[in-house]
Length: 132
Image (cartoon, rainbow, N blue to C red):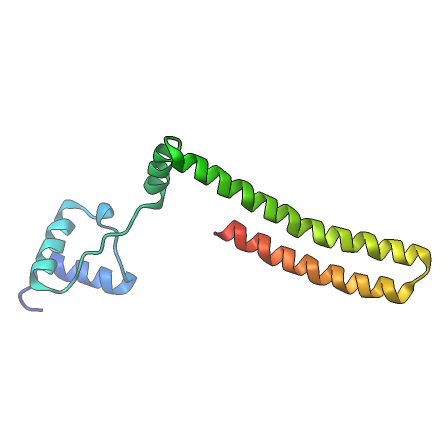
């Protein structure tokens, strides 16, 4: 540590406290300190994709050619599957109400339990598709 300059020591403290530091946010002095830390082997540089710019690049690439057709087809299939997932609890809820109106309370209770289970599964599927 004796071979490090003061700015190098400060930057090393910053990196150790935060875990990582964005290179673009560093000043010119700090960038020189990064070069010093790299040369001495105290830190390593990692390259990560920028999600905003990568998304812009995908938007620019996707409309041309067959990629756009494949993406829209996959999106259409995903929406169709989500509609089916939502339709199943709705059908079960209809059967619950219909059996309760007809006076079959035990069958209505069974359909109500099935409806709650399907609604929970639909919630998990929709939450998973939104997160992805």
